Length: 276
Image (cartoon, rainbow, N blue to C red):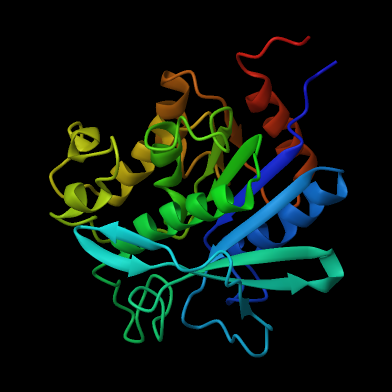
């Protein structure tokens, strides 16, 4: 009998109804519910983007989880955790918040349609904020499903800086690419910003000095156990890159393909494990 991944951690970039509808926001909303209805235990995280209406969506701070400072490039950034419920789905959503990175600021683009200069730092803060919060929850996911560029640094940190943490020691990681990406590079200071524990700029040595968006995705794939792509033709180069590293790829999938995702979680989870 196939071993099943029973606990799935969703680290998504977007989710309806909190932000405007998109391919990724639909997946962020629908897939966790579908997987939960299949009898799996889930936790779901997203950034507390500045365009989220806290009052209308009934977000409230979780004091016992907030209060930690994350140091990025020698600067302290307080971590604030909020939570809301989607009653119809019997699903809680945790939000990662910080005044510097999210307050009165939109998603990837500002009011004038320009990408924020510190998007790479925001992604670092989000990745580390989620992992620290899951540790505090004392929850041990079998599979971590990362969706979109905002989650792209989670695989790196799980497989390096957090590899000995009981919450993540045995976790497998699935990374989902999205049609919504970034045009700017990660910037010349990216190597300093990602530094944490045993992670430093050396993990970027195979990439260009400023690390392009495509290279960010390759970095995520390098530390993942599975890759999903919504359109094989559009993401063919990344699918082939993953396959060249013996990383399984689930192709041409959408939020509606919950059965395919569930089977893929089980496949990735079972890799390298003996069935006792």
